Amino acid sequence: EAGVAQSPRYKIIEKRQSVAFWCNPISGHATLYWYQQILGQGPKLLIQFQNNGVVDDSQLPKDRFSAERLKGVDSTLKIQPAKLEDSAVYLCASSLVKWGSSNTGELFFGEGSRLTVL
Amino acid sequence: AQSVAQPEDQVNVAEGNPLTVKCTYSVSGNPYLFWYVQYPNRGLQFLLKYITGDNLVKGSYGFEAEFNKSQTSFHLKKPSALVSDSALYFCAVRPASGNTGKLIFGQGTTLQVKP
Image (cartoon, rainbow over all chains, first blue to last red):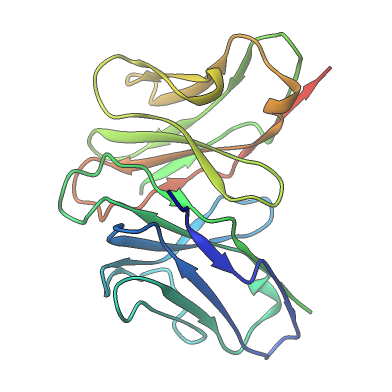
């Protein structure tokens, strides 16, 4: 079974530039998550989708971050304009778990996209 | 507020010795608890989870974890550490109800196993 695919693996940009990350979840997984992992910290949820709808985006800095999952499969996370503090690894995860159902399932993570903002 | 604490930034053990990586949580109601491992430049890999039942759960690579409700802890253990166990370990919690399914992570503990 193919895992969660993410690209690019690494990206270096200057502040105020824009960047986009792509994620393709495990086939059949309805729920997709984007987490931000700053060096020395645990992953923090940015946004959660169930199919093509947003379930939780309470911690997404909406003035500069946006995400979409138009067809309920792959997803794109965009940052525009980037700030120095956005330097982090952006992790995509997917799960069979659906909001409102039994939440015992684990999340499956991609290898992450490392962003460096200069 | 729901939170997870991993009180040790780093744990050092000698190969062959038992290891413990500590985790405590704060969440309303009964939690679901998880451990993940992260190797350098890789994503998080699932190790084990506690949902209900036996307080000692067994997972991948010989790891196990003990759920203690009175101490709100979920410590990760292994009877005999390997050098290849050296990695970053994350504890995570998901409330059993009123939650969208997301995991809340601790800050991570680096495990260093020396030959």
